[in-house]
Image 1 (cartoon, rainbow, N blue to C red):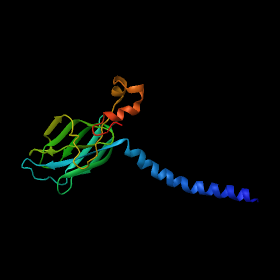
Image 2: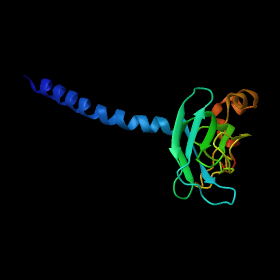
Image 3: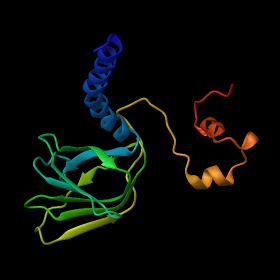
Image 4: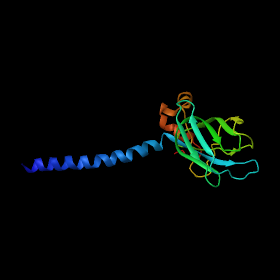
Length: 174
């Protein structure tokens, strides 16, 4: 074998060794930009935390479901949810079932939904229609979603979509 053949084999082995590492890191990076999070606290009517409540988030468009339990302080967290419209359901023995419809999660946003369970039998259900608060208290990051309608309807200087970044509050124009 010539030196060129050995060099080619060495490069091939290096590429094959690095490929799994690159693929391993590509999945979390892709998820970073196509997901959102939902968190909140489950309380009783007096404002005390309700631990071990079953909290379920279901995407109404796809049927995707994620379930968790509230912690000792009543907090729950869905750190990574695909974007879309969700229904939040909270169930705990001795309380009425709580259902919140119309929670819209957008790309890379953290929504918060506080839940107050009413005393009663499990067969009773309270349904709330509306969206969760999109005020993020856990991060100082500022962001905004520019949807397709905005991109089509807004007058753009030179028709370049890169100018849409200047619509976000706090972004300095050059």
